[in-house]
Amino acid sequence: MFDVEYGRWEEEHHRLVCKLRAAVQEHLRLRENELGLFVDNCLAHYYQIMNFNSIMSKTSSTCIYRYN
Image (tube, rainbow, N blue to C red; front, side, top):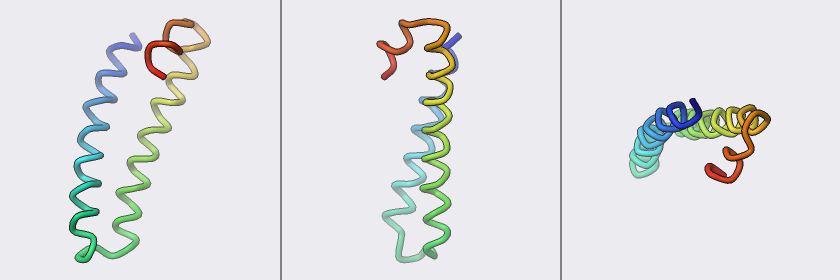
């Protein structure tokens, strides 16, 4: 179960990071609060996997070693 969810998370993470990089490269055309939204989305996405990893580590100790 964790492998499937982690794979989905990785795909979404890649997409978000690409959007963030593009936003940073074009930061002169973005307002500060718009750039902040991209950063907030990436951080929220990262916290999702950390939370999921925490939940899974309570049921399977191999998750801690494989994905941290």
